[in-house]
Image (cartoon, rainbow, N blue to C red; front, side, top):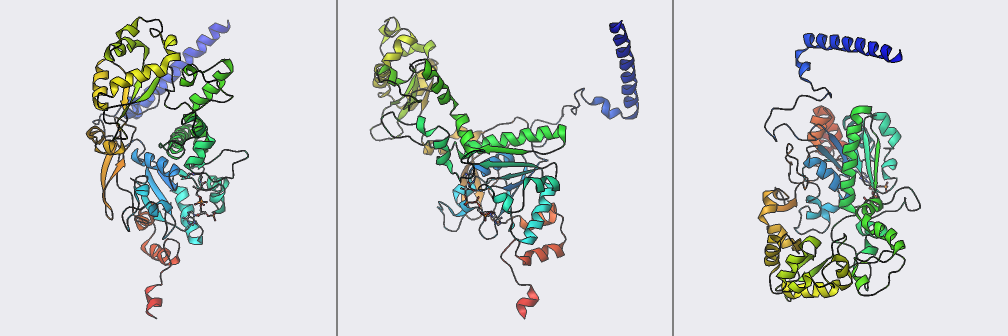
Length: 477
Ligand code: COA
């Protein structure tokens, strides 16, 4: 009975909705084309000409140094309009840090702030506060990586921002999440140490090491960008913004998760893929440093290549992947290892990794790293040349893909920057040079905030966007 009733109800509903569709068809033929999931019809424009992924998104960028700027630069590459707010006369401190060209913004700054606009606003000046509040009302996302509490001290608490603009997403990088260290200021290497990277990097008999890759700063900026894009997506359903927080300690730990994996494996016995196992050195209570051991199940090591005596980068990472073990044995002149029970299987090889890599190295030392790469790739053996930054800067394929981009700057001339490492087939990256300090202040006042010439003139002399200037009359007097 109940089934029958339900069927009848469904039929009526279906009829009703069919009628509704017919009505819609009759009224607005264009809507007929909309897909059943509510998305517009697939664009018929050529790939890459249908706008950029984030082109309608306005970002109020309060970031400085590296972690925050990495995030907003990526969003700008994806097409967002990133308005970087800087302190008048000073700007992001990195403009002047590690300067290589006198009087020009440093590469530290220019390589992290491409494709953005710069507005100078003194956030502690009453008029500056007013401008910021107007920008908050207009933008979609506020991104900041101040020390804990700094944004609140500017009067921009989450509650106030949410009141001004309930759709605003407020995204923050902090050193630590809630807990004993949340008030601490944090830089890259502090995060690498607190996130478990340093204790697991380096050689067993040496001190902990930090890595060259900026996993604390740039890594956390990347995490934050994902949080922002997700919040923007959720906002489509909820209509409201939310807070997005990425702690640098958490970001580093996320990237070092294999070491937390190993920490738990330790309870069940030694980590057999670590060379210390083959060397008969007992494991302690925590995941040890593993030198150049591979992080996964396929043993690997860095080996010398031809020229290593004078070239610090004449090395290759060599992985003894199990399926190509036979090919490796043939190449290095050890075909007997294919059937020798001490070497034929991965478990048999684990206690002999040192001997195996020493033998492979005798072979790699007779070739340049690029020759090893070429030979090994023909046999599907995974290897990676240790590329210097000079080699990377000069690598034509990285230029061709837009991963390394040359841009022109009015005060420093041409420089290289890293373009968008994330390639979208319908949203080509928009890589432009970094802005000069306050380069777009008046443009933003006029075109974004739509202020009149009179208002702009008043603000100019107020001290909110520049060091105070005397009005012409007063100056003449
Ligand atoms: N107008 C007026 N004042 C401004 C301003 C503007 N446009 N922009 C920034 N300021 C002020 C801030 O309000 C703050 O003042 P307050 O302390 O009186 O409130 C001050 O500048 C300095 O900000 P702060 O973030 O504390 O800078 P810092 O140089 O002391 O510390 C960090 C730098 C990176 C250690 C700190 O910002 C931090 O821990 N950030 C979070 C973690 C992080 O991102 N670290 C990685 C950096 S790559």
